[in-house]
Every structure is written in structure tokens, then in C-alpha cells.
Image 1: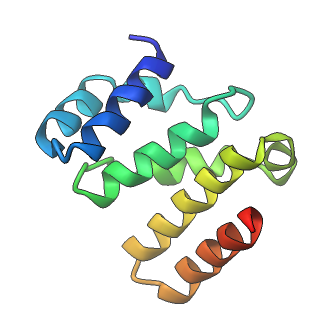
Image 2: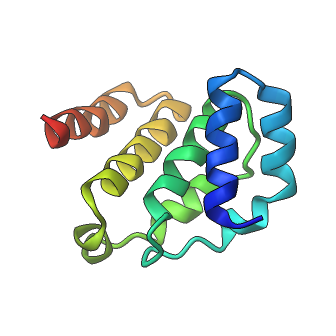
Length: 116
């Protein structure tokens, strides 16, 4: 399955609230997420999708955090706005996992300002 097809399928499953099926699919294809490259056109969307699934119960063993460290400030400047918003959502999800509400809100506020 291509990464694009995987992302589309995961988005459908989460919208339909088929959490078990989505977690199984994500578990089966986790290696595709491990290979996310900041230069890839779907990189931001991949991060945002993974963050959503982590939020609903996917156990990522720290994958989201490891992926986010791959995106340098220079990389982030090259990513389209939609991808950048997904990356900030991923950072907010990690902050919420650490129960750092202020940090999570800072990331979400940046997202809100980016799309206004």
C-alpha cells in the first residue's frame, strides 16, 4: 500500500470511528511511518495522522516524538502550510501526552493563527 493510500484509509477509518481496524492497519504499516522523510510531500500529513491515532489509543512506542525531531527549523520552512499545521498538531499531541497543557496550547494557538 502506498503511503498516500494508507493515509487516506486511516483518515476514513478515524472519521468512521473504526478505531480497532485503524489501529490494526497502522500496526501493520508502522514501518511506512518510520520512513517519513521531511522532504516527502505527505510528511506533514503523516505526522498529523499518526498524532490523531496516538490520541485515540494507538501505542506508538515513541514514534511520533522521534519523527518530529527529524523536522529541523529549515525543513519546516519548506513544508506547505497544511503540512506545517499537521506537524504543530503532532507537537501539541505530544505535549498533551506529557500533560503539559501550556505547551500544547502554544502549538494549537500557532496553528490557529496560521490558518486565519
